[in-house]
Amino acid sequence: MDFHSHMAETEVIGLLGGLYDEDERILFILSVYPCRSISTGLQCEMDPESDVEARYFFSSKGFVVVGWYHSHPTFEPNPSIRDIENQCEHQSMFRRHSTGVEPFVGVIVSPFDPRNQSFLSKFQFLTVSEQLDERLGCRVPFGFDREITRTNEISVAVFQQLSELVRYYRTYEHKVDLSKLLRRGELATRLDKLLQSLSHHVFVDENTARAFLSKVKELVVRGFHLSMNHDRVVSSSTTSSSSSGAPSLQPSSLPPVSSTRRMSFSTTGFVMSNSSGAVEPPSTRGSGSAMGADTTSQVTSRSEANTTTSMDGVEVQQAVPESTTPLQ
Image (cartoon, rainbow, N blue to C red; front, side):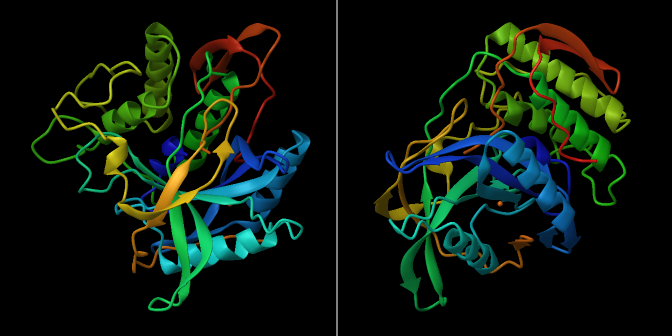
């Protein structure tokens, strides 16, 4: 989700796949599928064919759709009224009538909000309550924190998804120029920011993390034919602040919440088990992400052998999972 959100100046969109345990009332988010979007200005709609592809992909793994994500490229990850309406619609579609539970979550990613001085993207995880905000005429959205369950490997499937995203967005009209400086008066580029933010999601040993981030950097530079004026060293996965001295993003930096609401969500290999509060009033921006009929990240697949693969000239040696090709 984080990598995808850095690719375009317009909103991007994708689906989350997983399973719901009715007995334990836990939603397992086990897969992420970046989808193609049909964008108009700040708004985006999911390409219907991409929607079908995602559902088929999840079905092939025994999963169902359990949520969606989209980006707010340059502003806070607070849901707009349109976002809330979409979330309401899909929660209703996935409602378990026997229990009234709506196992469907939304995620908003903000990669380039100029007010965020950290190199880490902001995430807002949300669901919508039955409570009505009479002033705005919509149901009240609730956000929730997440607890990460870590894995000890990075699968080839993750790198394959990143490679497919680079292939797709290299010719995209509104792609982000990652070679540009992130902020005036600083040396860090948007690519530096992307790599630093990704490092926050990598939970392997330092050497493996550095090798993976180096491969990602090489993939992006080659894939987008970037001309970099300087060579920066990406910090390890344990570092959460930029070399320019920008403050790191703490959990409390998420949009303010009030009231409380308890939920239970978890993922295998990247995860959530939460308590929450009402999200601050929805943004009045024109942000919307209508879907044709979308926790946290791609889960590593267990494998039986190691191999070396090449993607856009970048070699990666890892355990072999099932292949994924989210974008054609």
